[in-house]
Length: 422
Image 1 (cartoon, rainbow, N blue to C red):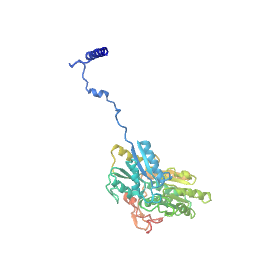
Image 2 (cartoon, one colour):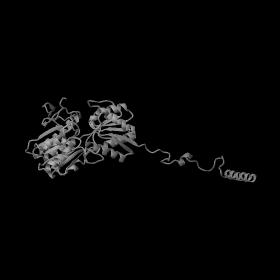
Image 3 (cartoon, rainbow, N blue to C red):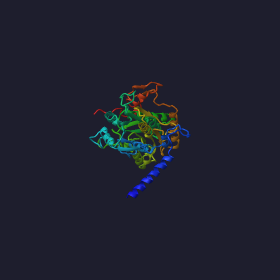
Image 4 (cartoon, helix red, strand yellow):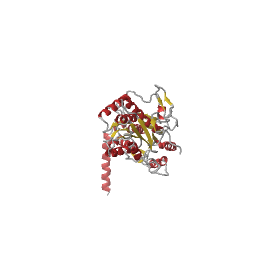
C-alpha cells in the first residue's frame, strides 16, 4: 500500500511539473491583445440556455356551432389560421347562446378558457358586447377582442376606456351591396327577400346595404320590373325552436309569394337548401348565402354568391401585437383589400360569384365591385329613412357614425325597423 502511495505522489509531481512548464508566465508576452474579452469567444447567436418562445393560448367563444357553415365556422377557421402562422394554441367553446347554455353568460364561460391558459379571449357575437366589457374589466391582465361592438370607439356612442379590449369588424356593407346587386340582376319578378336575424344597428345597416346595392344595379340594368325589397326578422342569429321564427318557413314564404331571390342575413344559410328544394319542385328559386366563403357548396346550382368574412388577417395582427408587446386598445372597422378581395391573407371581407349567377350578371357584379373599389359610395344622399324622415341630403355622404348607427331601415324597404314592444 505504501508503494502504491509513493508511486501516486511521484506521478502527481510529474503532472504538476509539466503543467507549470506549459503555462504562460505572468509577464507580458509578444502575443497581440484582442478587442473582445476572452469570454466572447464562446458566445453563440442562439445560446443553448435560451428558453423557447412562450406559446400564446387564445380562447374563442362562438355563438353557434363551430361547423355551422356560416358565421361561427368563419371564426373557427380564423383560429386555425393563427395556429398555423404563430406559436399559438386555440381553446374554444361553441353554442354560446341562451338556448344551448341556459343559465350561463359569455363572461362566465370565458372564465373556463382562462382556466385553460388563455391570455386572449375572442367574443364572436354582437349580443356578447356587454359580457365582453364585464369580462375585460374584471380581467385587466387578459386581452379581449370583441368581434363587432363599439366599446372602445372614441367617436362611438358607447365609448369606454378599456386598455385590454379591441373591437374588430369587417365592413360587410360592401359585401352586402354586391349581394343585393347579384340579386337584382337575377330576379325575374323584381321581388327580393332578406332573411334577417335580430334587429340592431348592425343588422339594419347590413340589410340597408343589400337594398342599396340592389337598387343601384336594378336601375343600371334597365330592368322593367318594380323593385320590391322585404326584410323578415326571425329574432336571433339562427333558429331557436319555440323562440324564433323558423327561417326555413320564412324562406318558403318568400319563395312561394313571388320572391325569387332570398338573401341570407342569419348565421347559417338555410335559404340555400329551401331554394334548392323549391327549384326541384318546379318553382325557380335562387339564394345568396352569408358569412362563410364555402357556403355555396351546399347547393351550387341555385346559389348566386356569398359575401363572407375573413377574420384571419385582423386576428393575426392582434395576436402578433400581444407577442410583440405592441397591443393597443382600438376600434378596427376594415374594408376589403380591393386589389384582391378574395386574398385570404389580406382581405377581411370578400365576395364569391356563385355558380348560378349568369355570365352576364357575373360580369356586371364584377364591374360594380370595381366601381366600389374606385370610390363609388352608395351611402350618399338623397336618402330618407323608412318613415320618410330625411337621412342624407342630396350629395351628402354618410359619416361612419351615420352608417354604423343607422336608426331605421331606408325608404323603399319593407319590414320592421325595430323590435316590437313585449
